Length: 217
Figure (spheres, rainbow, N blue to C red):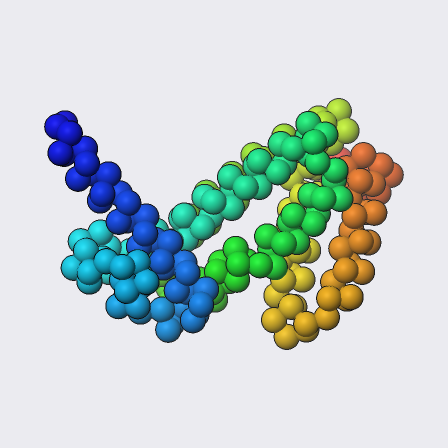
């Protein structure tokens, strides 16, 4: 490829990236329904024609935006998880990180799209594979999170998915229950419970039932 061709390709990729980021910013600012392609193009400072060149339909750009959102989230979670495994970050700080992630912009954007997908079957079918890849990536991260001698991969995945679902559920509550002390109590309680699930008697008890014994047998 010639230098001019490479430059054109780089400009095209940069325009696409601006459009995707602008989509996330617009949805976060005004909500899924109010985020029009016209406003997205304006926010990205590109022409309507340029937007349509990269994303012929609104569904195309929404899908690309969700893919980017989840890819960014996966990379961030993987980096922080690595710091916990190496001892660079205490487990309590990991809980704080997940709380910020699943109650802030990442959570709010994902919920906008999930809620819309509930009543839009076409959108749902497009988004399901993207979300499945996200959860598969998370499961791979969680499987490496714990020392295998303490918790085998399946148990590690369950413990960390419990943690994520707790934070996500609390994030939903923040919409109509703006009560920081309430959430702080839950977070501090979970900080005390999580180490016991990972390497203590609470985890032994959690996985002592027949469903887990049969899986090992």
